[in-house]
Image (cartoon, rainbow over all chains, first blue to last red):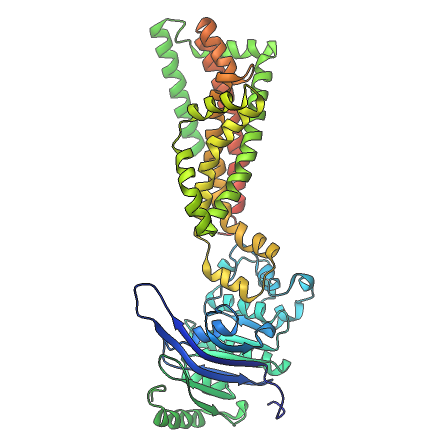
Length: 244
Length: 245
């Protein structure tokens, strides 16, 4: 948890975002969405699919500049996309090092590879790896330059439960150990309740903030009964966003 | 097995040639041994090495220039809509102008020089390379581009790790088709306006004595050289750039 009054690591304030394509009605994707992520905090962004979550992340990262509003903090963020987005023609090691600016690309990454269980795969090409392992490589790339915040877009989808849980554990251990923040987009409510310090619930298009829900219980002390009770409470209050 | 089939097909080809030559009994259809004899004589005189060497040098220089300019042009066309709209029509015109016309005009306007010969080959080949590479530049993976922006890749890193590997298969395809195209055009260019080279030699033996053994001999030697380059160099290059698949 962060000290009160400290500056947020990430700050997002999107007044509006429209998609205008020729021959189609303009669509408003985001309206009045504002939130921050504090140091050391895990924040999950939850909302219906197609609600504009990925759009908001792209704006935050500076990949989409066609919007009104203000964002800050992306320069100290490491990004993990929904698909691993590795360069298939480069080795695992090379892919991870591309997460570093050229001046620091030669730094020692033995610790990182070891921690993520990637040490035996450093010389392999990504296509030789399973999706779960490729996601680890993408995570390693995001962590390579010791970012202050990890931005994750649905990082655990299409993995089997065991692989997802393992990767989730790696993320939580890593950020807790380094005092890193996390902003994660997900539609898996159970997953969010399991690891988040705070849930941000988004409405349907145009996406805006419906609720900012802190989860106070220590991550280690979150048992199944607590998780189910939390989910039931949320589902009762926000039935459009969270199904029972 | 593959090699055996190849050798068998080659032997059948040579046997058919021999049979046809025997049947015709004319110096206008010489037998394989006659062609081989000519090749050996011409090599002993030193003309063969000289002419093949000169032609090979012309192919190498014009191929190199056409590849460099064609790749640069193709990337520009594939990445910039404005460049594509502006240059698409001239490219189409060039692509559909017969090699012979380009060659004649180059000699007329530049003069009967080495530079004109090289220019003619480059202009003939460049549009093909540009069109193939444009296809590659249009098909760059937008997701990887986005990743590169999110990680703030510098231009050099982007070019080396993101752009070039995606263009490589197209560039290799353009080189392989371009090399065979280049040497065929070089022969025409030599025939029309150079005092040496394989094209010149073939024309010389045709006009002077209709020496078909010489014509076939020269073309066989040069064909062998180009196939050798393709197998030993380009095919290995192709295997190398595809190794990660």
